[in-house]
Image (cartoon, rainbow, N blue to C red; front, side):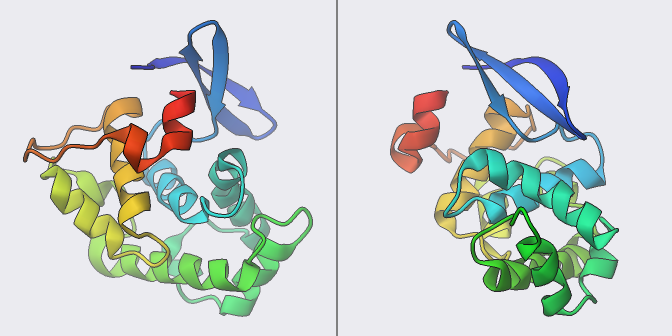
Length: 182
């Protein structure tokens, strides 16, 4: 299983470089060390559709720069049109800015209402794997497929502890594209 090799800076983003064989693959999400990095991970999962994963992982931080806030409490109260403008500004963060803006607003609202504005509270203290999947599915823009991939990344790449409830994830069937790079 790949493990964190080193962190490097690319522009204003920290990139986790993971050694896979003789190649170096780069996953554009940061280690989860605080609420902002956890929230970026969660939004990266939401943005991860209809575009390359690298763009998805970079999108939350770029959006926060454009909106001039990373605070989910403030984002939850922004008009969807303002969020959509931030997503659509060149270079666009996602091809479907209006739909993604609704997801971003909904994710921010749910983070505030149920998780004190901190995505780490979805998985900490350690909870059963299936419960994490169920909690993730409750977020707009995240279905079972994305929730399963998120759990896999949390446990296998980011070393988040979960309670063993017998949940099995076969990454080769859950996400063949991810399995190819891991």
